Length: 307
Length: 279
Image (cartoon, rainbow over all chains, first blue to last red; front, top):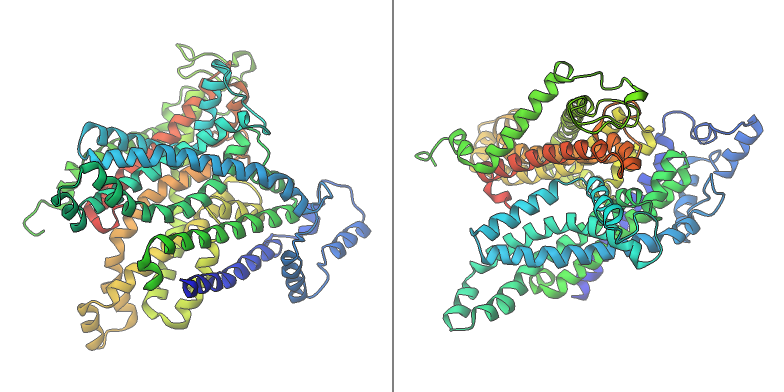
């Protein structure tokens, strides 16, 4: 188990290095002079341009720049936002909580809807319930989150007045965004739970358990569901990434503070250090979350850590 | 299999796939016919006719600038389908050769390419497309490139996996034994094995691409005003949710129907062409 985990952690290091390299090169892939683009909306003198270039260390050899970028990032220094003049790490710190809240709440919604729906669909295979829930799931997969969000606002905020339409802060503001994001993710989880469950229900050990005369529900919960949930755990990691990325859109729909709006605002304002820092942070978090998910996977499924 | 119905016949019997094909066919006809079917100019404003409810004058209503929502939705269909096709073509066009070469030759080249793919996959969902748009500067053309490039890892991996299993087949070994050149083996014996999963994934990928491109436009990073584009229209209708629900509802419905059709068709094709991929 430990060797497996150690290997998994070591394998992440080159990926993280690659991520820093990709994010670092963003500035050099920009067509034209990034400094001039960043300062386009300000009236500047050549001196100021030169000063900015020096501030970003763009006058140094490129390898040295990359070394500095990685070194600083390892110490938690992601540069300074051009617009707000604040440290990018401070900007991220101010916004990460809101996004994490949204992602976790959405995940809870997704699991609460998706797993029972998929489970019931599998148990009632080929019934109207199965067909109906899979059609709903298909609609969910095809639904643009930004449209669902707007519909939520119309229904629950403008008409019923139950929840605030925009803003962040308390739990009340969290409901509509997390339900929006969670419902879409639940569609994928429902489809996966159903197929995973169907596969397990066809296994010999389920038949044996039934043949021994165990109660149907006991078999479903103790033997089938336990094993069917294993592949679903992997999807957790992937879905968590989707939720992080989905937050980018949903945060904009609900004008909710968070990393997504930080990135979008940074792109629109051509604030490259802010965009780079935030993208790096989100990607690195995603990679680390997946390592943790893999660890959990190895924990519940001995076949992984042995093989 | 030889005695069973032909693939085409099986496709026609697949209810989901047929539904998807029918929706797509109608959408394609509407999109192609948009310039003739549209009652009005999609970008011409008419301030005095602003915010008209759907009805006899304006079939699907008018927006805050007095533009005809029906005409804009029709032209939006055109744009979305084109954007989806171009993005997926970029993804398939770059991803397939990478996967073919990586899977067939293996070794160090494969190791390097796959590490690059791993790095790209570390950027979840739309984040990679966002990062690429930020480099290329916002705009609909760049959104297509960004969405396409962001999907390259998916196709490269898929193709590589198919190649790896095809490479071990006896007929490939036979082709190599009689002195077949790499290029011939790759295109004639290995590529056909890749086509089925590729078609399935690309069909599903069309839906995803349309969704991503609309999302980027919704965020203000894609199509710019006054273009009639679905994501943009949703963003513009956002401030009028209470008094003019139709501005954002019809483009939203358009996106959902299009993506739904792609998913239905993709699921159907997967059941028929490549049952192994079934989730």
